[in-house]
Length: 296
Image (cartoon, rainbow, N blue to C red):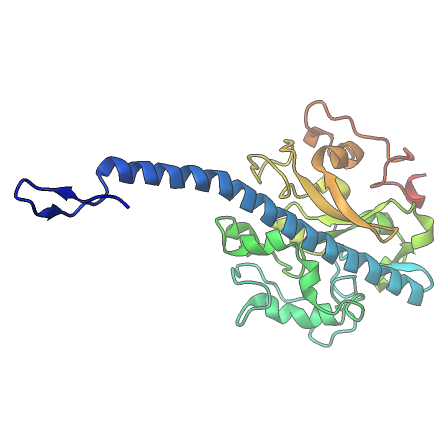
């Protein structure tokens, strides 16, 4: 026990912390916080990554259930549909006008009260995978949802379709050249390699890429996972980030920006290739983005 100082008069003098002692305590707390916060952030990232992959896995499994019920045909990507059905929403089978409500300008969380995205929910429920997915929540990366209310909310606000964080690979309908794709069907799953990439996280910095739920590979992927000093508006720089993807064999995993760009980044827009990146040929057997009947 600390002894009380005694005045000359013999009366005890109450003792508190000195300014130096307080500063030392504050410095120790700051050091401990500095050591703890990165660990907490890393643990949070791992938890979000696990949820992300779990959702992607559910999408791939529901896709296989769909193909089993439809003569092995994959569900179509959105691809600018104005009157058909796709994997994430339906227009043809809806009776609400044939166009999905525009959610541009809405900054509310998806499907929250009075949000524009809430009006899009019935379109998901009647979509090609709507009967196989229990909830639209699996269509979102948890990090994407966290950014709705962050400093990055302007990009969320500008999205037209607010049903998903992911985009379907347009290669499964030969980038719009497959006859009959407007009816909601793509090529057969058996026409592709098991490791071919079915979908990925959309490059979230460009709201236009969310105008439907299908894109071309060269339009890029998100780098929100494990990126360092991520500048979202720069599509050509490698920040070491990665995106969750779903493959045609039913698996889900992460792919790094460099690996994805090497497979897809130079096709269609060669000028967008980061310096030093060499795109694979669309016919290369190890190219799991562009591989398929139309490119062999």
